[in-house]
Length: 100
Ligand SMILES: [Zn+2]
Image (cartoon, rainbow, N blue to C red; front, side, top):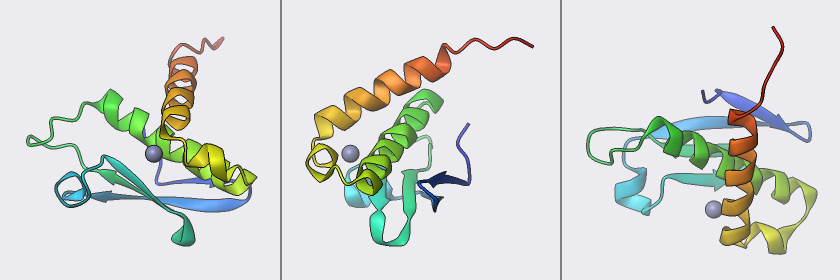
């Protein structure tokens, strides 16, 4: 599931969806740091994005926002680091076990 917004270091970050993000920007997600917005490609029959890919993309953008607000600009520019961190985070979340 992907929320409508998320709060990172007291900043409310909105999630917006676009049908043409992949076609126009060649990516599945984007951070608009100056407007506190995460933009995600809407899954559709053309891009064939799975729910998992979209959820992973969302985490990728959340990691960008965390690093942005923590001031780790060099790490924030390191797409390989951000992607690896998002993958590990997503796996940890998906395998979390809760008592009822
Ligand atoms: Zn990125």
